[in-house]
Amino acid sequence: MTADPLLVRFWGTRGVVPVASTAREVRAKIANALVVARGASIASFEDAARFIDEELDFAATATYGGATSCVEIESGDDAFFVCDMGSGLQQFGREAMGLCRRGRPAKFNVFLSHMHWDHIMGFPSFLPAQDDASTIIIHSCHPDAEDALRRQQDEIFSAVPFEAMAATISFVAVRPGEEIEVDGLRVTAMQQDHPHGSFGYRFGDAAGRSVVYSTDSEHRIDDMAREDAFTAFFREADLVICDTMYSLAASNMAKEDRGHSSNLVAIDLCREAGARRLALFHHDPFHDDEAIQRMHEDSIRYEKLTRGGFPLDVLCAYDGLEILL
Amino acid sequence: MEVTYGLSPEAVIVAPVGRVDEATWEKFGAHLSRGVEEAASQSRPTMIIDLSGIEYMSSRGLRALTVAKQEGVGAGVSVRLAAPNDIMREILAISRYDRLFAVDETVPFAEGGGA
Ligand SMILES: [Zn+2]
Ligand SMILES: [Zn+2]
Image 1: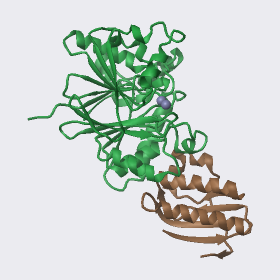
Image 2: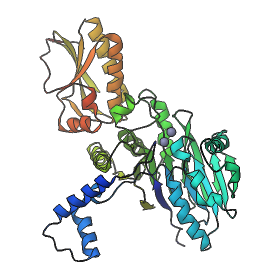
Image 3: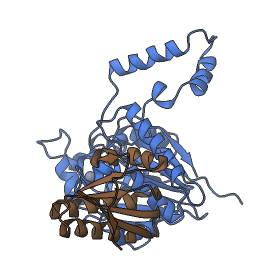
Image 4: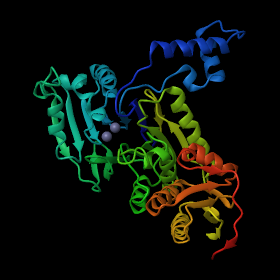
């Protein structure tokens, strides 16, 4: 018997606030690509696609995207699993509605890391929430999660009140450290250091594969015991999605207490945990594609320079990335 | 982790040897704390961390540098780095620690060693 696939799909990978490429940035990418391509024989779309893959790097032809935190996990079950409801939720909702029209059950298991705006702002425009055929179950470790979502749709902020959402919406309180089973996945939460608190989630499937979603999580310079707890939480995960918004220097000096972490700490934690892959996540909204790509290249280099045992695969999440585990 | 302490007219020079990682960062941090205390008690305004014997350093070691810098602020001792190898130079750039610390090419001559 072959196991069901376990697939992670990123709908929003930005932190703090959604951003979008400007006309000037897109134009610069096209102009640069045309210059690089001068003299090449490109007669079809396929030729062009091959040229892009072989000759140009990611930031030159694509974008990491600018939607905020939203990550889907697809397991063998029909129910949808989604971590956080940032602005990436809107596009996810549109695609999900299409699948539901073709027969997939409209059941959505949401796992909320916390209720900062960049992690919930997609909910008011989440199409399945406006459909009375949908069931949405919001799992959270925060007792005030429902209150936060209702307040987000107060008349002063939103034209559509929470009460007007047609879907059947319920809230499930999750206790950190206590494993629960949700539609075929085993889920455990862990408290993280972040203003008003945030929670990471570890998902495990029947085939023994696991994904950790750990965003908005600060790792302080003087709390190494806590770091051992994260190593245990990440232990031998197939994929760990980590908040890597700042450089190490920024995270422990200028940006201390902001509740975020760095690429270097994420790499060290994953390595100590024996995790297989790390996805850099919650990108700084002030960083353009080149800056994010540089951070990714730096991360790969650091992993190589400090590698003791087997390699850790360091990926950089972008809106639209799919990782099959 | 091996370490030697030296004194120049201006600075206490701490020279640890080896790699700083999960297994050694605590000792490394303790050596740096002692270096800051020595500098304060010997009336030296600076502690120089001689990195020439350091193979590489993970984030735990880098964060120990930050702790030492903060302890230095409390004790009136400024902390500088010196003589990183090529790998350490790259790690300081990747972590942006080269913006946090002054990094000297060479270590000043130490007059006499402590233990
Ligand atoms: Zn966030
Ligand atoms: Zn947050």
